Image 1 (tube, rainbow, N blue to C red):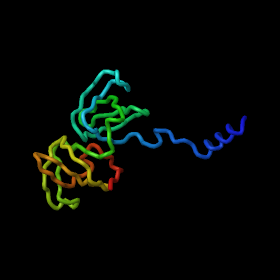
Image 2: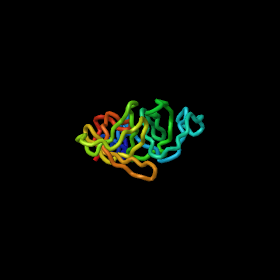
Image 3: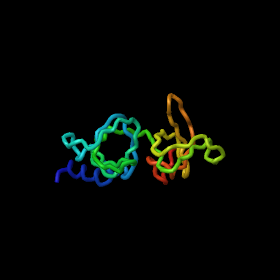
Image 4: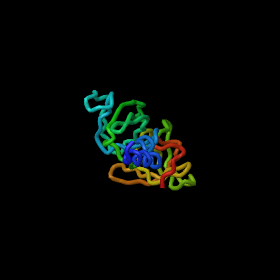
Length: 162
């Protein structure tokens, strides 16, 4: 072995290169940047399974490679492949309780300020262990409220967002 080969092997032994999957855990939630196509396979030539026209729509990443994400739609449970460039790290959620979801003025449940239907979209401000502080835009108005985390798609129970 040459001197250079030995040096490279020593560097790799003490400073291993992180693989892509170690940096970004699976499963995880991401949001769409804008219009996007869900495909049957992980390439641009795969047929389109579903088209999304919803900026901020949350998708659950269930598998990934360097360029593509196998995702699950939280409302329809449809699974398919989407390019990594279609996502951002801004967090959005969708109400998941099919009965009624309540929006509160604070996490103390002291005042209900909204009754939210199933599938309402919101941007996450923060989340603690039980509650998420959200922004909901509707009819050119903006509402801020707290919703119980258990009633949301797009966030795991163990996640804290500050």
